[in-house]
Image (tube, one colour):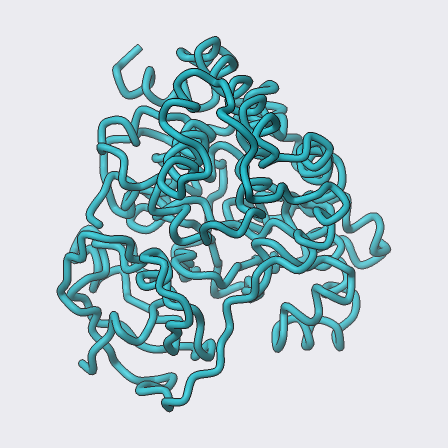
Length: 216
Length: 216
């Protein structure tokens, strides 16, 4: 294993090299903050539960499926994404100012945050580890085709790739292209096809749905 | 600041690797690092820009070695001490020296806080200096504090594609200066402009505040 492989592994390995130290450090901080009256323990549970069970990429998939099936909604979504998305009740923290980017046969959009981990929480939930990792943050801007290949995504040479680096408080959601052969599907069935990665722009939506490739 | 967080265009990190069946959190410590950060953010003692700066001002070696929620945990500890909510001694021993006079964010206000988020749009008296279609250059600058103009675009020329109105200016907000807002634009840079012959075609888009830009 080369040194970069080693460095990389620790980002997503279940065995964090400082796991026991971190467990103790967080536990100590939690009790200290509760003792000082700075944290309500019940509030912690609500934060965790919200992002574990309530907010996730199914929200974004509902928005995309509606845009695919309702041209008036799609027009509104591209014109004023925050308002259109709010009509589903998806709003708030890390999604205050939304912009939707439409993929076409000529243009493919891909979203990154090179400086930290900005991501549209209300529609996609919390970002995956790879999105926050150094390889993605470094290479999305200067090697987008290489990054897409890492995801098994090959685009024709004549498709222009636009990379959106989330450097401020605007949050970007990709509107992927609706795959051929899905004309007979209803909104609910379409939602099942729409992957998180297709709304970040590292994959395209396929029909039938692609079986996720196992990471090594 | 030109820190290790400013990763756009760096080489050597290897491929982007997806984790199979990635959970929302890897273990209890990540859940708590996340929830404590949000709960303490709700104390109103700092803003998101101060928070980002607390993470990025670590020594570069440490920043690169940390896993994601370690950055959050470190940032939280730094902010608690810097704002005086917790003393160094309390952090070291884990023992509270009395109650804080700042009140915890109560559990019953969490939902509302997340739903509201914190909108960054502001009204400003001055008219925008640029409009879509204008050519602009990102100023050559190296501020030692927080900034959201990554190194890879400084000195480069792009085209304004959107005007987002005026938003809270991150550089000032990270210094605790309230009420400073500037017009903000989405600016497209061709891959050739940013990476020369090593570019892959296409473009990179960034959201940049007016003080970063000059006419080109």
